[in-house]
Amino acid sequence: MSLLKNLLAAASLLAASVAHADVALLMRPDVQRYIDEQVASGELSRAELESVFANVELKPNIIAIMDKPSTARPWYQFRPSFYNDKLMQEGVAFWQQHEATLQKAADTYKVPPEIIVAIIGIETRYGRNTGGFRLADALSTLAFDYPRRADFFRAELSEFFRLARSENVNALTLKGSYAGAMGLPQFMPSSHRKWAVDFDGDGHKDIWSNPVDAIGSVANYFREHGWLGGDDVVIPAELAPGTVPDELVADKFNLHYTVAELKARGVLPQAPLRDDALAVLVPLEVAPGEMRYWLGLNNFYTITRYNKSTLYAMVTHELAQEMRARFVQARMAVPAGQ
Image (spheres, rainbow, N blue to C red):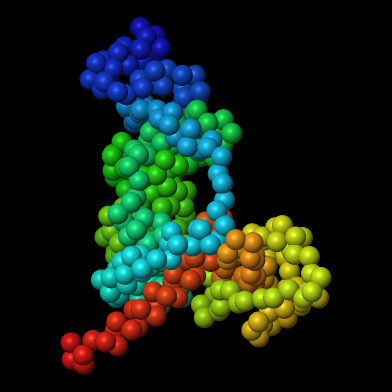
C-alpha cells in the first residue's frame, strides 16, 4: 500500500475517534511539505508531527480576529483599562506573595520588581487570563490558513513543537491566546526558547503554572532587550512655540535622536537629561483634543520591545510606579515584629 493510502487509512481511523479534529489537514500538500521539512531537520519525527496534525482543529474564527481592523484608542480611553484600582490591588498582592522571587530577579537581572509585576498583570491578570485556545490549533490555523503572516507563524509553530518536546509535554494539551502567546507573561514560542528561564531549578521552564519561572523569564527578557537598572523610563516634555512634532514621532519605536537633537528641534525636557542620551518623543492625548508630550528613554524603548505600543509602555510604567508606592505603603503599615 502506498504512503498516501496509509495516511488516508490512518486519517479515517482517527476521524472515527476524534469527532472534531480536522483530519483533512494532515492530507494537505502544504502540511505534508512542512512535515517533510521538520523531519529533515532531524529534531522532530514524522510520527509525532502526524499525530498532532491529525488531531488539530482549525479555528477560522482566529482568522476573523486577526483580520478585524484595529482601532487605536486614545490614551485617555486606553489608560483606565489597566491603570485601575483592581489591577493595582492584585499587583500588590502578587508582589507580597512572591516578594522573595521578585527580589531575586531584581538582583539577578537588574530589573525592578514593579516592572515585572506590571507586565504580568497587564498581560494575564496574574495568570487568570492566559488564553483558552489549544496552541496547536491556533498556530496551525495561522501557519496554514493565514497567508499574510504564514512564514512567521510557521516558524512559531516549529518552535512550539520543539518547546513541547523539550518540556516533555503533549503538544495538544498546551493552551494560550488566539495568536499563540503563552503563559503568565504571554511569550511566543520563539521567545520561550530565547528568554524563558528555569528560575527555580526544577528542570522546566514552566511559564504556564509556575510564577517563579514566569517572573524570572520576564526579568531575563527585559535584561536581554537592554533594560538599564536605575535609569528613568520617561520624563515630561514641552514643545517650543512653532514646533511641528510629526517627523519626530513618525518612527516612534526607534531611538534615532539624542536629547540635544530634540532640543534643537524645539522639544524641551522638563527634567535634567544628558544631551547625548537617546530619546523618543511620545505624544499622548490626555483628554479629547488635548495633547501632552513625554520623552521616552532607553527603558521606555525596552518596554516597547515587549509590546510594540507606546500606550502599553506608558501604562506599564505608570502602573509599576503606583504599585511600588502601594507596596511600600503596605509594608510601612505593618506593625513592627509582624
